[in-house]
Length: 242
Image (spheres, one colour):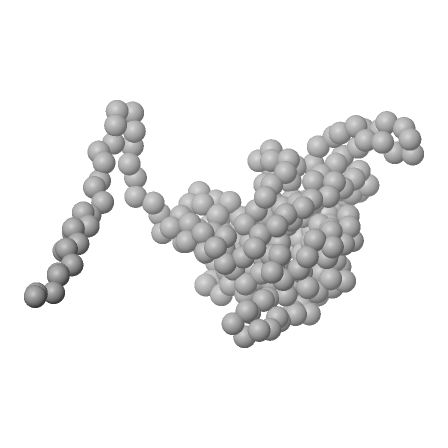
């Protein structure tokens, strides 16, 4: 008797291009957008993302900046934003909780704890989003941080970054606050354990010493890799940051 032969598999038809409907426009995506899509999808597939947030009273920093910003701009030539204040606090918290600044390598069965901070700063520009890295930010004071962030952000928007200035980050801050976002759930960059979102500083009524007060408040929210750290560490880190 002859052996039964398996039925031939039907050929897979190539995907068909659908013509745009009325009032639709089809454009090819940019190289930058394609890379963003690939990196973000890879991050979600390769990490166990968890998230939490704290609410922070920024009143003292808002008042300090208001007093100092004009003199700072005149002396340093760059604007004094809220970011350098946050960065200095982030560096302090990362040094207290180095697990949040670590890199997990499951294949090697090891984690690398970085005793330095190379800070990724997400910058929006016309082609999408890019994350230049400020190296050695843990060795900078507030003025140095302000200068360094202004430098990489300006060169990012003018497409003058060097290739090695978008690699090697250990922790990232994204800053959607200027666009009006009040709370965010960002996606981590590959090789990092966490990413912090710095959202809009807004006036809100809060309870201080059992009395209602109007204060400048902000939500600092963090996505983190649950394979590397747990909720207790993430919450303690955010508490130290606050």
